[in-house]
Length: 626
Image (cartoon, rainbow, N blue to C red; front, top):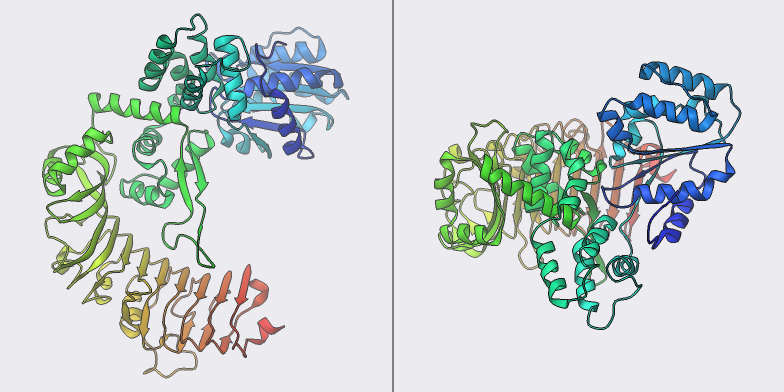
């Protein structure tokens, strides 16, 4: 079987495949985006392994055959290749029964490749694991990893982008017929390879357009053309996966392509939920289909401490450049055909910057717009980041402000201007500055708000203003070593008790006045700082803060608590935990004044327990000591 005209890098690929799939079963799935070389690798593996088996069959284009209702033809091919029997099946069920019965009577070991599968039903018609000899090997290639998972295939191999050196050699082979670029062509070759992003299909297509000429001017012209618009063959190949997306998946795919590459996953999830979409499920589906990646952003070191991401989490969106271009081309076409209108190009954002948020909001009242903009707004005299979108996907819904970040620096505001619409806001972040109160009046409070971050800023009426945020799920209060907000412990705990949907609480570089006692166990009524219940609160993190001497938490107030971290908390001497349910994660770190931890903790139920650099700690619950 012919594999490729220039099999560059295939030896390394085969070696990596063998290493990663060794001992993981006899059914292996290879998944990656279209044009990445899945079929090429499968053909190379087939050629190298087929002589080790009694019979072999390479079934091409399963997706295409299924679309034409021709899976029975593929079943006939399997029967012919493996058993040298020629039979035309009248239905898929007949073919499945016959193949299953025939394989069950055979003790032979087979090598089978099912290429370009995109639905579990295709595997049901062609793969019969319960009667397949354990010495057989089945390789399935697909663009959608979830197809493998749904079919119970546990061994998955993700095909990576080509190494830079292999990509350059492949380009030169196709364009120039040699392994390396001649003098004067090095930069052009590097630029083409950079545009192709390690995708073999794009490398071959772009190089083939240059194979008939060595004119540098023509090469430069082709490079500009390649940068400005997708080649039709590449677009068609990549567009196969996009053609199977539903409306919501297409909307989120275009949002990521236009706005969210390199941005936090948590940010996108919050905004899409505000748009009325099933965000987590859709993002996972796009990831399974190899249309996007989610990568962990590295932490950084300050002094001798490794710093992370106290409120955004470590994960960001990544997308292949060609998929990004295809998504933006889809968005441009939709801008012409119908709403919502996506604005992401530099000239669009420059226009929004000149208009200012107030005028943009006014113009958006009679149309649907999606934009994610970070500008210095002259009308507000501060830098803002905002996302305009929709509260749901109905055609009649107009634009809403879903996300806003205000960088006030040292400004003093009375409150957030009343012309900023907060009624459908999902996330509010205020950085720097000082306010008398967050909003002008209680009626302006963002009733749909899910996340609130106050960073080096404060409101004179905080934390009492929290009580109006009944849908709040995440609260982050963060100061700095030189500007540490002072919070009244009793007011904070009473306000938290009003937040029935709160799930995550982060206090970072904050100073708490008074003990934080959220438990009636062992305390008088006058000592308790709250009687309200946070039924959904699961995670509490307090870091680099300055608390009073005591923290006490009872299960009757935080019954769902699973994750508790106290890190570098000054003046903290005692912690009392009387829990309704066991914690999953408990961490005390760098609390140098901490002397006592008491309560009904059960170490056996803890997934993780960390006690580090608490030099004065003398008393622990007997469950932990044992």
